[in-house]
Length: 146
Image 1 (spheres, helix red, strand yellow):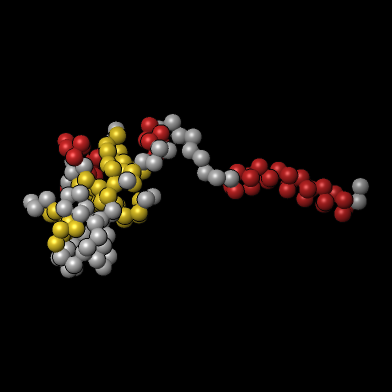
Image 2: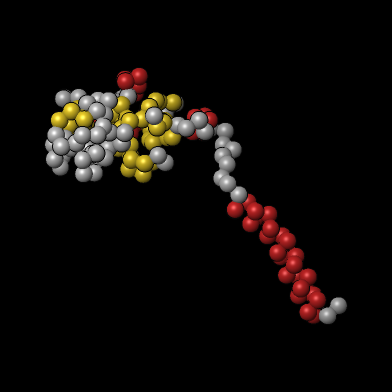
């Protein structure tokens, strides 16, 4: 066997042995995790935080969730009454605040006010906030676009 043939065979062997890795890297991501939250995520629910984070202040703001920015308001004690909205004001894009005493969302930039269901109530904003369904499953806070 000549040196050139040997090098060709070694190169071919390296290429053949790396083929499964290349195929796996290019294939769509699939989750085979046995954790209970993964089953919910496959049905459109996305984890945005933990119950501990939510209970700490009564609200959970996640700017980079899989479905975009999300503000969840409530506690694990009031899990059936969780409120979840996109916290971007529909007037000029400022991040809204939750005012628990007033039970409203308020834009700090121009004073727009939104009801618990995201509907515009007062101020320059005319369009409602985007809302999500929210639930607690185990120690996770999950949201689903409505």
